[in-house]
Length: 122
Image (cartoon, rainbow, N blue to C red; front, side, top):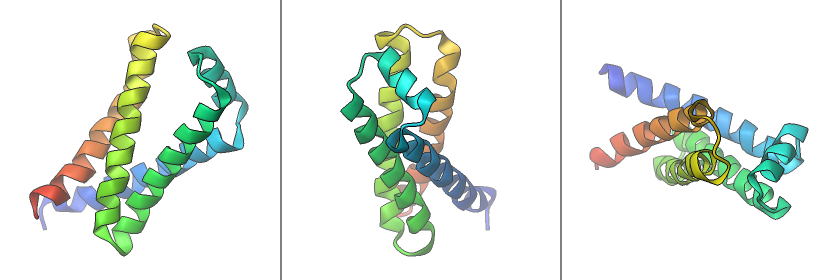
């Protein structure tokens, strides 16, 4: 087993857990999530939608580890799209400093990693 084949499920599991946690925090309405979405100028319903997409994407990654690998691909695609939106929000909507985009950029790269390698092996 190659290093990449070993790393994919580890990164996939960690990213899945992180996204389920981040999405749940937005859905539940943790104070910092509420304040961030207010600062971004997004309506409250958008926080729920974003949290739902993150949580479903994370669950797709986790379920894809054990049962249906195709769910991991779909989950990864949801996370990729959400992280692109997060980066664009930080850079252009609220003109945040560059460091605020580092987290979403790391999750974007991780999402690309766990999504692209299974697709290449088809």
